[in-house]
Every structure is written in C-alpha cells, then in structure tokens.
Length: 464
Ligand code: GDG
Image (cartoon, rainbow, N blue to C red; front, top):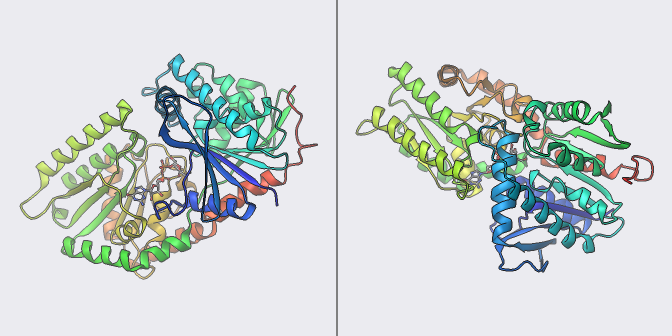
C-alpha cells in the first residue's frame, strides 16, 4: 500500500481534544493504515520563518507542522483564503476583497509548504491536498520535480464561471489545478461549473470524467463527503448525550425545539434563518410559547471584518426578535456563541423536533447529516434544509426550502411541527439510508480509489 501524504491548512492531531470531526477521523484512519503523514500549519506564529518542521505521532498518526509569520497569516489565511476565495466561491462577490498583497502572500505560503513538504516526499507516495487554501501547491510540487500521484479535494462550492472571472488572475490560479491527477468536488453542480470554466475559459475538452487542457488530462469527480454515521448515532445514545437530552427537555416544558448549529459565518444564512423564524412567529401567534429556536453558533475567523459584522448583526437581530416576542416565561430564541463536545451536540440534535439548516451556499454541510444520524428512529425529528447546500442533492426527503424566502421557511416550520409520526419516520429512514451508505469511509474511498488507480505513465502528459 502506498504511503498517503495529506496536506491541508490545519492538521488535527488525534487525542489532543478527544473531540475530532469526521474528516479528521477518516483521514487519520487512512494515514494510520498507510503509515502516512498529515502536513499543515501548526496554528502558531513565528517571528521568522525558518522552515522548521514539528513532527509528532499520536495514536499511530504522524503529523508534520510548520509555523507561519504574522504577515503570512494576514495575507494568506485571513487575506486571500478567507477574504478573497471564501466569499467568491460562496457566490458573495460583494464581500470578496482583491488585493495584490493577499495573492502574493498566498503564493508565498504555498511555496513555503512546497519547500517544506518536498524533502518529506518519497517517489511512491500518494499526495492528497485539501481545500481552497492550497490550490497551487500541487503545481509547485511538480515544479520541484515530483511525479507522484496527486489529488486535490475542494470542500467548498465551485462558483459559476461568470462569478469566478471577477477574480484577478483567475486563469493562473485555476490552471494550477491541472497539475493534479484527480480533482474532487462534493456535488455534480460544483463539478459542472468547473467543467464549464475549463471549456469556456481554458479551451479545454471534456470526455466523461476526463478534462484535457493544453495537453494535460485530469480526472474531475464528484464525491460527496459524509459523516461517521454509526459513530454519530451511537454518540446520540451515549450517557453524556442522554443527560443533555434530559436537561434540555426539562427546560423546554413540553415546547418543541428547533435547532441550528453553525460556525458563525455569513454563508450559513443565519440572518435569513432568524428572519424566517421571526416571520413564523408573526404569521402564527397561536404557536407562540409552543416552540423555541436554539441556535448554536461558535464564532469563527474573528479577525476578518465581515465576520465581525455578521456577529454584530446577529446579536442585534436575536435581541430584537426576543425583545418583540418574549414573555416573562418564554424566550423564542436561545442564541449561544459557544461550542459543545460532540457527545453533547448529538444530544442537542436529538432533543430537537426540527433541524433548521439554511445556508445560502454550502459545499456540503455536515450538520444536516449529523442531525439525521442523531435522531431517535422511533420518534425522529424533521430536517428543514436549504436547497443551496450540497447535502440537498442527497437528502431529498428533507423539507427543502429557499433560505432567502422567509415565507417558505415559515411554512416549512409549521409543516414540520404538524408532521405525523409515520411521515417523519418515512422521511427519516430514507435520509438515514443515504447518510449510512455514503458515509465518511465511502467518501474517502470514492476519492482515493480514483487517485490510487491513476497510471502516472499513461494517464496524463507531463507538464513541460
Ligand atoms: C466545510 C464546508 C463541508 C459546529 N459547531 C460545533 C461543532 N460543529 C461541527 C459540526 C460539523 C462541523 O463543525 C461543520 O461542518 P459543516 O459541513 O457544516 O461546515 P464547514 O465548517 O463550513 O465545513 C462544508 C465541510 O467543509 C466538509 O467538507 O461540508 O460545506 O463549508 O461537523 O458538527 N462541533 C462540535 N461542537 C460545536 O459546537 N463538537
């Protein structure tokens, strides 16, 4: 078995928090089996970048991390990755900032990763690069002479060509993707947009999964990421989750709870969610006191201004809605800016009659799948899901809504609250089948299966 090298912005070390996400667990398993290494930024700042690598091995998983300079973090991470690419790839060109320094910093840090990683790579290693922070890395490794099998997976949407061309030097960035052998997306929609760009902007030709541009052929595939469904369902049965469930139920006093769980990010549609819920309260005074919304939203990317703004906007919106509708013994929104350990989170999902997942645009959205996996099969809740989440392609038995429409959200909440048990069970079973079948191991296999099968001698023409 070839050794797997995973490269992503951050690495997640097993057992450090005891609270790893599904992606980290899935990659850790593959790394353990192949005696591979996970490489990324340590999250630490250094005064002077030296290329020093911190090597660790936890629970059979090797990690190698580098520290970055403050300017690197400003320009590469907060800058190009999160002020330029993230908003643009989530269709928010109004929020995207184009600055030469950001692009320079992004390329510099990717070169730093290439320099650091290159000596660690053996000829037979298979390299798997993750996400928008690292798009040009594969090309930089090829420039250093590495002929390894290399794959890239994008965890966020691929935007329509008409939006992507607003990025200065877009073709320079996208052309670096053709250094990989396999490029993966969550859904056919994102894949289709990528193909469109390759054809229209690069003069490429598409032949099934293969795209050829300028003599280089790559495979572009859709592999929807999943969760560890079995483990999540077990977590919902755990003592910790059951205690959480009891604690929440006691506080609800027979009211139905709607739950939202999201990083505090404008792409998650939190303002629209609060407005949709407010619309429901306005439309249905008879439902007051019978329902409440618990929104868990741990802050993220707090150094980026648009994230400070969304936080302030939500603080004020939650306050306004609660001010307008609360009574002495009922508050319609419980707005919580802290995160919870996974077991507790599973209990929170399970205690909610409705999972409200309303991103304006989302590569996949794992919360939707976690909500499904955490339900009681005998009395499952209802998932209300934005049609603009990648997950909507698989979870067709959710109540699919347009998150921009407060009316649709209000109607869906009413419908979910009234939904009979047999319909809830039928919808849940269909969704759970999909979540169980296309779980996190399936996803890993979907991508690495393609990558491992690449024949480097025949599958593609080497760059000049
Ligand atoms: C990107 C893409 C794609 C959240 N709050 C807590 C907590 N979380 C966990 C959730 C879930 C994860 O964070 C969030 O995953 P999402 O998929 O919803 O969203 P992003 O963070 O934006 O992830 C997304 C994903 O990459 C994978 O490819 O699906 O489209 O944007 O697992 O549970 N976890 C804990 N406590 C919290 O309070 N423990």
